Image (cartoon, helix red, strand yellow):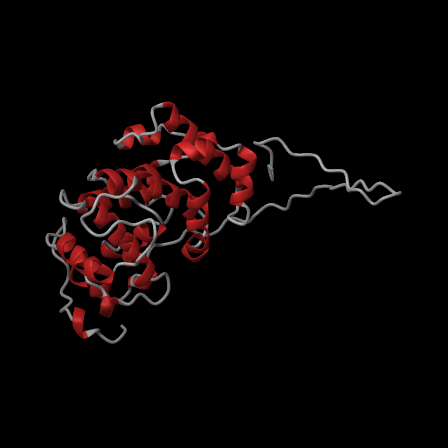
Length: 276
């Protein structure tokens, strides 16, 4: 186990029975002093802008925080409101999205903005309503619901899955363990400050409960963690054996006009493989 940080020096008894009483308060206290300062976040205890929360969550899907940090402000300058984004041509949105990957996300972003604009520019304030919008799945609906609207719901991304699987030493392998992890994560959500709690769990996974070499000695919730108590937190979440990937073969053609070297381009359908 890593050296213990004196600020978070805890005895590590075998954790108490579920639920973990006091865990949320300890995590929020840590978050208040150690949270990541990100441009889409509001200060602790302050209501966040649903547009910024939604935009950041879509950008962060399959993209690093560092990449989004370099692009979020520029995107917001170009499309400062959900109405502005909805009214923009899709070609402009795709051009601004270049470099963030997976253009289907940009298309869903635009479709979602148009759906919200059609309802007066206000996002639904319930998880159920948010989940009906284009491009918003269970995690994103939970994140927006908790962070922007104070709904007491868990937002379970990869970081949170890792934290919860270690807290409870969940033996079942992924992805079969996901339903249990979601239920346990939900059981931890406090009625007070659920949005800050959601972000605190994300930050804990991103900065302390690392995929390799978790910093248990610096963890504000180590006293409640089965993995920290037994010293094998790094073994969780349990990963299933990877299935062999099939080999797929394809043929590509390039048509070049001889006299001037012009290249023939054809835009692929929006739902095709490698859609444009």
